[in-house]
Length: 181
Image 1 (cartoon, rainbow, N blue to C red):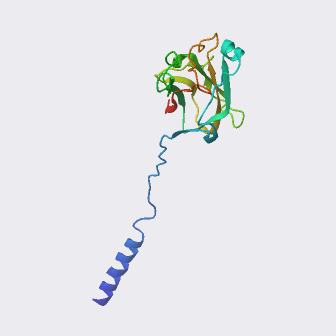
Image 2: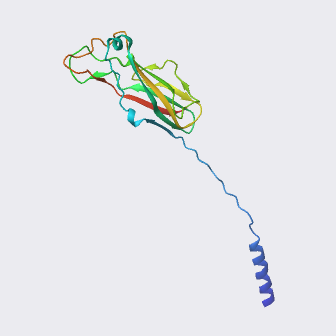
Image 3: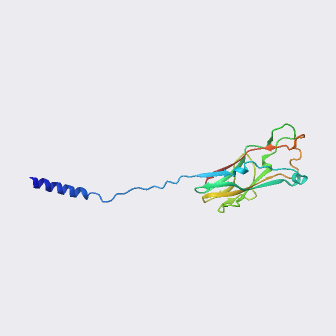
């Protein structure tokens, strides 16, 4: 009986040790969409200064080099909008400044340029609705975009100054947004 029990135990042990020699695992790489847009911290205020007669006649502009930094895990679009017309904090003068009199133009940055993108030709006139200024079918890692802010000439703002001030300041908030495409 001992021999039969020992033989049975040996057969069971041998069968158990050969039962499984491999196993499968499902491996997933889960790529989640990420889009970030950062305005260069030293450029969070942009001034368009009208100082000379020529400034009023021809308009003024301010180029902000590498103004936006983009990260995107795939194709994307960057849009711009204003919170409203440009308003002043003092009374007097002749109304607000129409946001549409300011033009925003995007171009490839001077450092780490976003080369694969399409830039809206001639830029866009500011409005309260999102308007695309850059699109790309490819992703981007820390790529830069220049932004030029240009305001009206043709003496469009000649009656906006309020007497008694060093300068009459008109303000709006400009918002840039990045979305996946």
